[in-house]
Length: 166
Image (cartoon, rainbow, N blue to C red; front, side, top):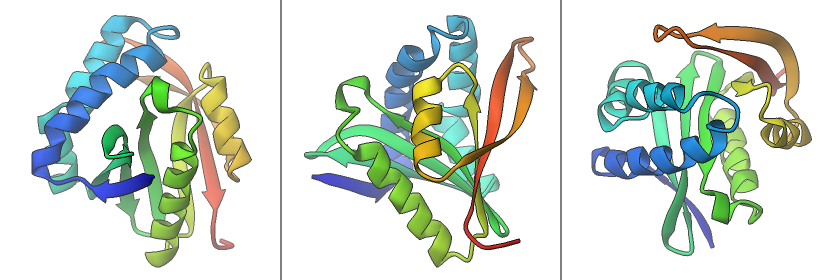
């Protein structure tokens, strides 16, 4: 059974721990591990998550499969646009429709909140994830280079899914 539960401050450490495991397994094959560490500290630490929720209009959710936290979801509401900022699932739980359920949840959240489009950024070398987003109605709209203060840069795609005609 798949459940999606809103994350509260007591859950932020759980998300941080999940992020450390998942992001290294996803990104270390395509970017330097030290950049993954930087990303974890700056964007997925307990303090970073708290700041995003308190100051940047983020919401986080734990993805639960058979009463086990197996991933998480982070979204940012910006007027009529929703940023799908994070969707990560432990490798051993992929292929169980958890991601599909999470994307359906995001669509429902967007519809319930009058959102016109959902946007996300995905690494160009993360083809499996790109394919999943394409399958669920997202389109690649731009190729971008994201540069970070630690001197590292990554090649990403901006993808979007239009929910209401603009």
